Length: 231
Ligand SMILES: N[C@@H](CCC(=O)N[C@@H](CS)C(=O)NCC(=O)O)C(=O)O
Image (cartoon, rainbow, N blue to C red; front, side, top):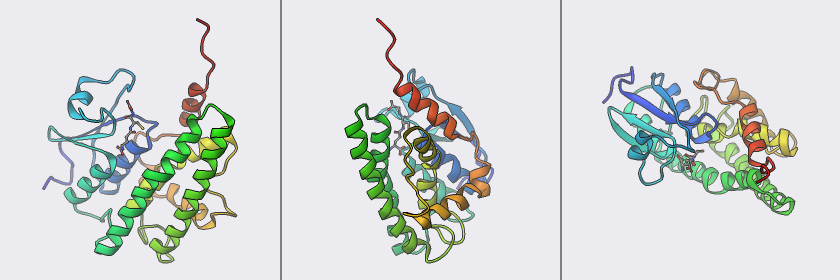
């Protein structure tokens, strides 16, 4: 078991990545410090390629020289490694439910909203927007069930599903600004709208370093849709 000071912890990241933010939030929640190294994903470092030879993606957590890849795996590793408030619920049924909804956010919600961000044609964007709104409605129902009337998916304080969905929020704001779509909407998903406000106000979310912003995500979207330079 590692010490609480998190010795030998390095995060290979990309500031605009929601998957990287999850890892930083999980480490923050446990109160451990870590070294953050920003990757240039268009020119990946030897360390990244060596640490994640299968996917070649960030985040990677390197703990005492050993790499751990894929954000859900990293979050669970961090939860098992460090004492303190658990990230996943301790009750096996609640744990399974939290894993289910986190996987749903990754497998359905993420491809829908990111598909919207990437879409070049209006028709495709409208289709992906529809899928995004359908997926978020499921998350609204999930919130009612998981929170049991408390402030967060995790109960009184943030947990696994809060971190997973909460890490998308700065991107949702960017989507609102660029495409005029409110993914979380006070009239259609009121529980999530109130949750999102509470989430961004938590110490863990406010103090995460490096803090990604909606401006960065907007810049990313604009770059993606910038006209090609003349040949
Ligand atoms: N399933 C992965 C997704 C990670 C991912 O998609 N990372 C992106 C940044 S958001 C990346 O490294 N992209 C670089 C590439 O695809 O070459 C996780 O949960 O960690």
